[in-house]
Length: 408
Ligand code: MEV
Image (cartoon, rainbow, N blue to C red; front, side):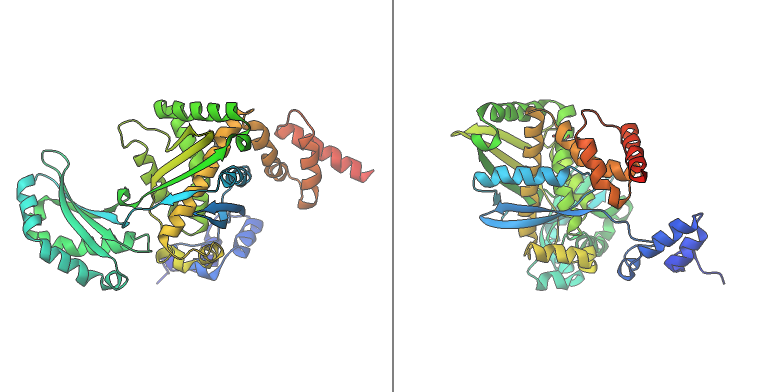
């Protein structure tokens, strides 16, 4: 019998796709045995550039942070933001007493009081079931912390399980426990819709703060404008969305470099950005005692073990590089990078605009885009940097001129 697509080898899959020989062989060359095992229908690795935020002080410790991202100016900006924060002593982290993730059993057409009563009278058995279904997390000191009933509408109810997943991000742990727990709710089988973790990681709220002396941000006037910009994004969804996007440039680059689930972190972050009824920027800048003061609070669900992290050597190398062992340490570093990234963006916007620095960083990518070879990139970038105006056509023209010159 013919093999199913998912049973084929990566090269057999490539052979079935409409590809030029050149693309086929490039994708073949980018395969890795390890990643073949990670996703279904694997054909190749998709690589992103990884760079370093060289030095950020987090809770008094200097850390070099790996960042995986395609946007050329992000890592330069993160370094810049970190330098400003380091001048004020670096970033301080406040962690929750005990981090936990929530899982939901979802019910509809149900009377709240009836199921609430059931949950209250079955606490012992619900806790016992969690222990039986995931003993390994109990061995590591985690496990179920609470089970409560939450009214969603007049007829919809969520039974929320709060679970300490220790240094794992915990999605699998939570879903395993939840699915075991559903058996206890057999009396409500007809009203039961489903069981799934929630990515709203409200029990993993982390706050980072930092301050910058006026001189290091470009003077008091620049600091005041940063504060005005920050206030603006508390009232305007257009600006808040962009500011949070910029924040996630830095945050998600570290989340990705460490093999964590950046969609979970971003979903939770954006949800929290509207927790008081209006979508707002997640950072707040103010002036206190002649310093520009920044604060960022975000629910952040990441891990240092389990799932893809343990299966991807590059993620483990990234964690080793930062000497990070616990998920809490990682949370603090990720948020510190976010604060630095946001500071650099706000400073660039109020002090001359981002395009100057941004475009200069884009020139290397632009050079590749217009067909420059690796040997030609640096010369082309130098020529582009000397110009007032640059676009694809101009870059192409200069590349052609360079080639003509080298022929003569
Ligand atoms: C660009 O990727 C990110 C910024 O737009 C963020 C911001 O506006 O705050 C510079």
